[in-house]
Image (cartoon, rainbow, N blue to C red):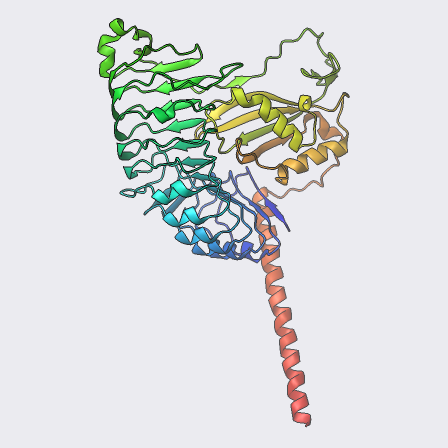
Length: 486
């Protein structure tokens, strides 16, 4: 067995330690259940394990130190559980780890500086834990591979991290802590999209190094003690063609000076309410920036307007909006899909790039993939409803449906730096259920099936031990007879 996939069921109980006997296991996919209890130490000795995906359960207890033995594991997705205790510094020995998602747990203690030694680490997401009294290790500013660092609401103290030494950092969120002192003045990576330092106790001025970052979408500094001048050229070097936008949130600080008039492009939103400078808003011509306004992260759906006649209704046909054949009707597959740690705040400017990335990963033409709707969820995570269309024809054949399903369920789509790790919520064949091979019907519940699988492996392990014992005893008996015959 290489894949154990019981995602999105209602399985209760704890993870059996016998899972550690499945030495061929590569993907452990148990997210979205009702699992409780602690993580078995034995999982740390599964030699080929690539992905541990146990998020969105009720698993408690500490992270076993034995997990430091998982030399082939690239993905630790353990968010949204009740894990507690210290993050084991021993995890720094993991040579292959790229994604460390432990947000929304009850972890405590300190942030291990040793994590900076992980040679392939791309994403660290530890939001909503309680590292009370701990500071952000300065060594995290030396993780040269890092793409995303998210430490929101972790009860962290001390100075803000100087992340200017992380050459590819695209997303930095250290908001909702008790960080103090000035904001580091070093220039961040040019591909950064999101900087959130809000809801801390930072003081001093806003560094000029935040200007001229060409991919910046959001700069959040609200609810600090920042003083001095309002930045007047953060949008420099940003191309606002298409759907690009920029949010600059400085409200509830102590900003008093406007060194230069504010003349931002139309796609830039500036929030200054709650600053002393707004007492002179009319004289400074900044009243539009001093209004109390909430910023909502945008969701959306595909514009289905078309000049084509309606498709026939005898089958669930739909127009392929971007088909090279005008007004082609086809029956789509539907996929519920989620980006678990995206590297941006606003998806709209990245939608075309996402369509190209995912369609290429699925060996489809770009027009065959449509993002029907997308919606931001707590995390932040991005949930999507996708449609997959056949290539210049009305129907997929059954082989192509199975191939696409296996691509999603086998995690065969290469991860993207900007889109991060994904998860399949549901693959919905819809009408194609009629042409797929029928599965053997079973009256067993999912829980019973899991029990049988685990019991089978446990029995196999016991049987293997018994056979080994019998062989050893026979071998010992034969040696004894030879000796007695001399």
